[in-house]
Length: 109
Length: 113
Image (cartoon, rainbow over all chains, first blue to last red; front, side):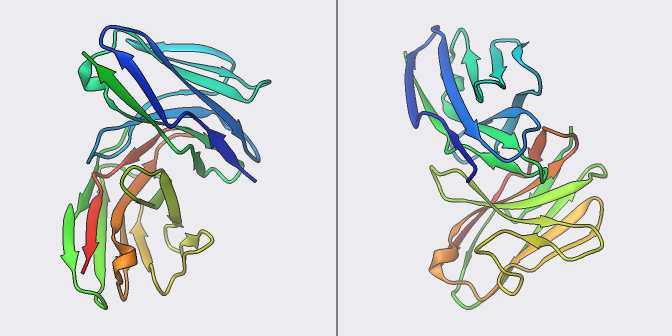
């Protein structure tokens, strides 16, 4: 079957750095995406990695290792507004997004 | 990127009735999808809305319960038919503009009483 594994919850302090890991097992792979969803809101696209390595977009970075079927989202200089759920997703051979269960990020002052 | 307008944003419906949710995209997109999400849970794909042909449904979802239309490349509707309290959920439409990115409407929070 197809599955993505990510921690259910991560807690960090404002101003710190946090890493959210994602491991995947899918039929076909067209890259790993990350989405942010605030309570009551819709998912918003953050980043994607099609090739191995690190992609940086401001305070957020995303990493992919295809040989390890592994990626992570790195959030730096955490702000209270970063409190949200973060989903990793892989587009499979049918071009459908396979979603992880989501990681709730709790940020403490 | 794409901006998606989804309506209604929320509704409370009587069991046995039907609700149609609309999604309008501000540009032509290749693929549109409909998801269901319980609060605090991940997204579950209901179906892929195909322009000019019948939608492709995921296991556990059928056309009679969730009829979908997609008359053109910017618009789609999802109907939740003969509703029961178990259909209470958040329904999201999504559009794909590239291979990996997806954009979402703001969701429809449905409560069936």
